[in-house]
Length: 468
Image (cartoon, rainbow, N blue to C red; front, side):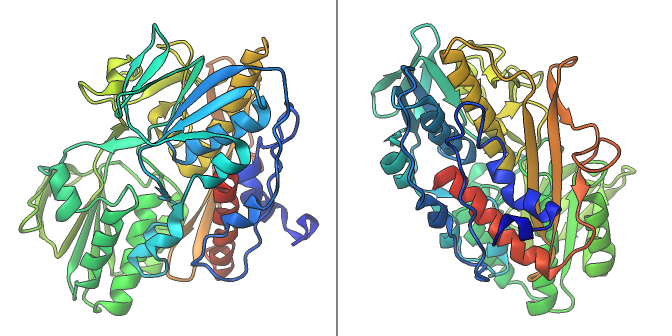
């Protein structure tokens, strides 16, 4: 589809993954646009992988270790090689052989997608871009010696370290990690828990599905509300007219796409979804699936559910007491859950030479896959500049974009532009949101089947940019 034929807002959403992809460092990061063929169940990132790249000899030489092979880590490793050239030895440390995308994983719950369609590997990063992939876990960082200790007993020296470990989930609501894995899945990291939750939904009949939403920040702000809509649509269509979805939100209000989800809860899925904000004291019995809590005014409530989907509070992976991230002193936010960074380079404010990107960072941007892709590019650009004796870009810009399915065949979208605020040294919404008066994110004007179709194009393009 020619770019000139795409309306400006749609073009922004589809090209969002390419924003910053052609930096002033040489423009090597051209992204091939993956065109939708109407098949919403396939991943087509291989289409963009057909483009051949040859990193240049920039004269730079350095050892870069990237920890974590998710959206942030994979993108950073790729663009460090593209922009830094042949002299940059980039090693990606990731224990899993494959990455399962959290984006689009809610569609597995209603059968629209198979979990296998969200599966991505690292062959392209290795074969095309020369990224060395090390299958191991990080067990420690020696910040003085600048080495990373791995689970296989080896260690990797680094000149610059990029940490993109993602998030881990706290024991909460009276539940344990074993409960999440076997009885009350959070499914907020796509994989086996996603399939378990899908099977629990399929077993329901005219019952109550309870889901909880932790206080922000958490991964993917619109994600829980999207999930509630898809579950409601599935249950009322296939599992009985008496089915109900109860959403217990610890936040005072809907955290993203407020107008869209207010309409979805009150109109599209009226009588099926009950949304309660400002709840506290949630407790869940993993065996009986009884949920107790205090409502917004402090009254005790009890629900007997057929299925319970608790989304527990998050923190940066390794930031718990005794964790490798905590031992390195990187989890320096006030609550100890996140890593505070200089958003011009994503270098840790606690440890020089270490950059933290993606969900683990505290940087003013939402925690989401597309944002992780953007942060990775800003970070890679800054590292290459620093290695060349320059300063990071003083005015970085990032775009956040996503689609939210509301039913099995319709979706909305959300987009925002962020820019650097030099006075406060943080990323903030652009003064006009990139399009309208007032600093705000922009919601789609309607929920439509057209948005649902374009969602696959956006997704395939984004995943191609990170893994292709």
